[in-house]
Image (cartoon, rainbow, N blue to C red; front, side, top):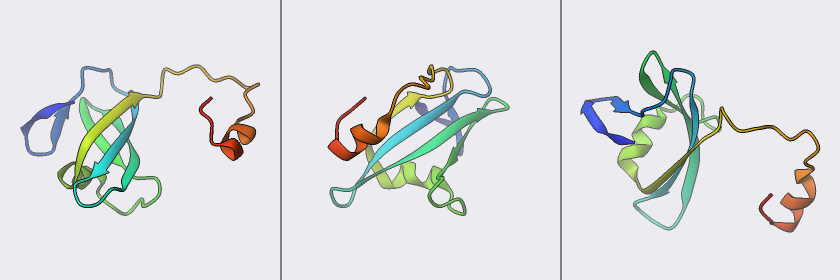
Length: 92
């Protein structure tokens, strides 16, 4: 993700409809949060599914150590049972 050329406009070199998970470690404290972004009409729109009324773009100002991954092009495995992985705390 590159810095905005103008306030509120972030550039990802991905097509419209591309979706991302974003990990942000907060500047204050040791905690972190994960939220999502989507490319809509060439602009990045940030969402927080846990708090839909919030402006998740503000998280960029409050965080450090950002990581993101694309989710819309991932292959779905209907046979993967993640319930056991969640209970054991393992990665799929």
